[in-house]
Image (cartoon, rainbow, N blue to C red; front, side):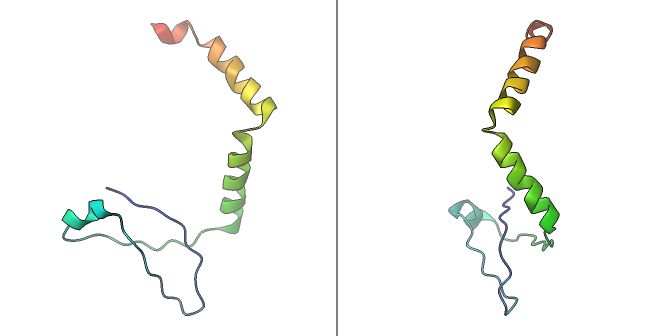
Length: 73
């Protein structure tokens, strides 16, 4: 199982991570700390906004209809 959640870094550089109950059966886990690029987080916010953008959604619907019959195989 993989668990991923972004955290803001506190001034003391200490993180406390609460794991779900599904991890109780595991005896070990690998922890990887990756610095998040500000540009990357901005892109993710734009992607979230796109999921409700009418023009984007109409483009997706058009593409889906273009492939409607080819996907039925």
